[in-house]
Amino acid sequence: MAATPLCASPLAALKKTLRDEFPDVKSSHLSEALACSLGFRTHAAMQAAMVGSEQDRPFVLLRSSQFVDRLVQLGYDDDPEFDFEMTIGGGEPLLGVVSTVPVSAYEIEYKTLRQRAWRNLLVCAINAALEQRLFSLRPGDNRFPDNMRRGELFEFVLPNGMPARGSVADAGFHELSVHAAVNPNGDTVRAFNAGFHAGDAFGTTWIERERGAWMQSSDDSFHCRKWLLAELAELQVAPLGYGDRGRVIM
Image (cartoon, rainbow, N blue to C red; front, side):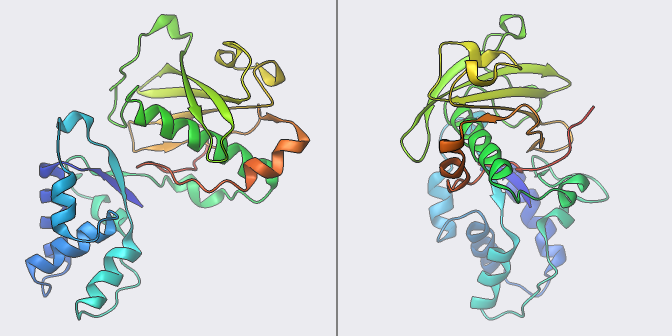
């Protein structure tokens, strides 16, 4: 999936590309299908959500299947091969529209309890940091003190109600280093090798923001109490505008 901020210019550029891709679809119907792909019931609802500073507006995943399904509802033929990632591949990149699926993402699956628990904890942490506006998915858009890259602490709550603490730091090259701990213990979560000193579960990741927007899959440093593993693995959480897998960039 690709993602786009809820801003007029990137949405207009994306719609122009879609008009070339779907020349027989009415402009108003493309607008409705595009809004649907972003999770809105109507184009008017999407417009109503586009308020405030554009720099503070979130990135939202473009769901290709929802776009095509809406066009089918409006009377057009199905197009199961369409993917928004195709709109940013080759040629000039679209303004503001980014990829969330690196090539390496297709090699990664979260099959085990441990892998799913790590993924869910870090997605919750990144979502919370985005919602608290500590950074955005735009390259270099950090909004926390550098603190010599020690990590800016933030609090959040998991969907199951458990308390958690995160740390975010600049990792260079527009990447961010994110750590998270459940039932946290002080500010130990800042340390990459904190393990159980940080809490009953502890994990780390990096967020790519230069070539796209995704978290890098690395559960090597993940520590989790046995009694907590299944509970974390069963959490239902979706990333807010970024991909949830990709190999670590060395």
